[in-house]
Length: 369
Figure (cartoon, rainbow, N blue to C red):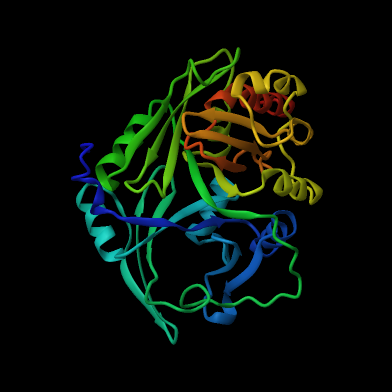
């Protein structure tokens, strides 16, 4: 892709439409996401709406939309996905102006088709959708919804629930991070460049992202308008096993490592999440001893950041605050990042060492380091 912008607009993206998880028990997972993360009931599909193969619950918080999908029979491809990977992300859906064209543009550039373009309709209008394969068993769906006014999409009905915990201030999906296998990062960087017109905006090598024991490499891919960003990690050689290797061992393939969700007040959001039982990585208090010397003045008091374990980093355009949950399943696979950007466009490179060491302590407890 050249930097003049000649090639990058063949796939205009409006943002992340939803992230769909294949899970063992969507009813219980939905309760967890409502209780712990403050998501709101949105829509439902299943046998009552005519779907005999699967059940799906749609949850929302501001612009974040999650779908939790469970198979209704053990022979389905969804059941095979859950059996192999445990609960995990199947689809990162992207909102587009033209789902048919998005499919054509990406497939003719080498993407492998997942869902042929189709139009689904009900009394609220129509949604057009299509999809392509990305790393592992993960897919991108292209969703065109400007001619639809219903709750979510045809086939779903409003999910009524008297149980509605308050939201915690989650605003939108900031980025989704993929873990790929040994020496696969550049393959997938090239895939995003060639088939989707993305650009590599940041690169971290194993010298920047390493501890005494383990290392990884990472490249951040961004679409033309910067609305959609996908960092891609691969393992690097170290004395012991990196968290990317641990992920690959347990997920049994490449897949989504974490979803980063933005907030306007990270101290308030993380305080609420912690009170509801969400567990975060423990950061040693020594991290805060020289924090202001390292990143300069910030608006927040250090004490609440220290108490909660929130990390801070600065780039040329401002600073960011971030924190990472422990894995949210029993397999040490998917986790969440909560991020508040105060001008910074980067991804917290200055925190990688502290974060890695925290991850390694958890790995060690699991006997996987």
